[in-house]
Image 1 (cartoon, rainbow, N blue to C red):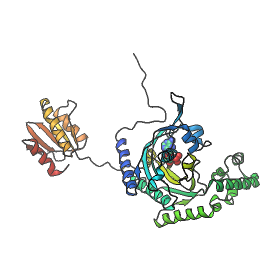
Image 2: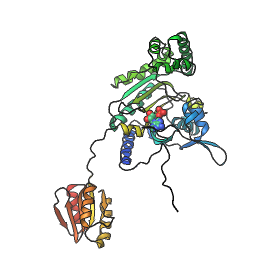
Image 3: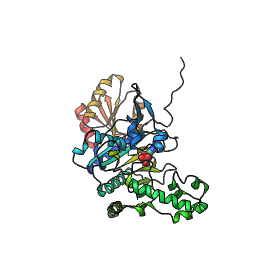
Image 4: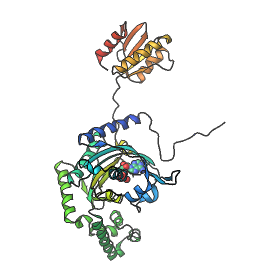
Length: 414
Ligand code: AMP
C-alpha cells in the first residue's frame, strides 16, 4: 500500500526541540511574574457553546463573522473552538458563582486558541496565548497592574524595545454618540476625503484616522476625538490609570484611535507592538470589559485583562548564545555493561543530575563524540568499575563503585 505523506493542517505548526524549551521558559517567567501579584492559574475548555462567543465577542466582529472554527456535535449542538479567552472566563465566573469569592478574582492561563485567518508570518490558525484577568472590581489600579505585569513578562522574556498604545473607550453609549458625531463631521468634509474613506464612512468612520491620503489627513487633524468625549467618571478612571503608569515610569503613547477587534471593551484599552516584527506586530493587548459577565447571563461584574501571543513574543526575542548544559553522559565500555549503566543513570537522576545514557549501539569512540554533542560536562564510562572523564580536559579518574563515582561527580557539581 502506498500512502501520501501527511502534513500538519494549514496554519498550524509542530513544536520541535529546541522551541519547546523556549516556550517552557516563557511559561515559567509568566508563572513567576503573575503569581507574585496574586494571579492563580485557571483553565476553561478549548471549545464552548458557540453562543458564548457570539454574545461575548460580538456578532458583528470579524472574529465571529469569519474566523471561528464552528462544528456540530452528535446531538446537533453548535460548538466553537475558542478564538479568545475572555468570553470563556466570564462564562465560568457566572456559572460557578465566583462573585462569592473574595474580589477581585485574579486569574491567568496559557493554552491554544483557534482563528480561521489567512496564515502568514506570525499569524496562525492555532496559536498560543498567555492571558491574565481580574474580575469583580473596577479599580483603576487593576488596569495599571495588569499592564505593568505584561510589560514585565515581555521584558524578562527579552522582547526588546516595544511600543505601548493606550486609550479609553468610555461606555458603549459614549462611543455610539461619538461615532455619530464623527460621521457627521466626516460628511461635512466629504469632498476632501479619499474615495476609500468616503465609501466606508457609515461602516467604520474610525478607519479615517489611519488614512495616508493627504486630504483625509488634514481633515482628521481637526476631527473630534473619543478621549475628549468621555463622561467625567470614565475620564477620571483613565487619568488614574495613567497616573499609576507614570509613577511606575512606564512609557506609553495615548492613541485615541486605538480600537480592538472585539466588541466587549469599555474604558481602558491597550496594545503592545514590536518593531522587530512585520505586518503582524501586535504582541499582546487587552482592556476593561465591565459589561461582559452580565452579557453572558451573570450579575453585573467589572473585569479587565489581556492576552499575549506566545509565538509572536518568541519571534521578537533575539536569541542569546544558549548556555552550555551541565549534563552527564553514561557510556558503556562494553555491551554487557548496559544494566550496570542503566542502574547508575537512574541513581544519578534521582540525585538531581541531568543524565543521558548510551542507547543506540555506538562504539566507545562514538559515545564520547555523542557526549560532546549534547554538551556533557562529565562522562562516566562503565566497564571495569567507573571512569569519570572531564569532557573539557579529557582527564579521567577511576572509581571502584557507584558511591565513589557519585562523590567524584559531586566535587564539580551537577
Ligand atoms: P487579540 O485578542 O486578537 O488582540 O489577540 C491577542 C494576541 O494574540 C495578539 O496580540 C497576538 O499576539 C496573538 N494572536 C492573535 N491572533 C493570532 C494569530 N492568528 N496567530 C498568532 N498569534 C495571534
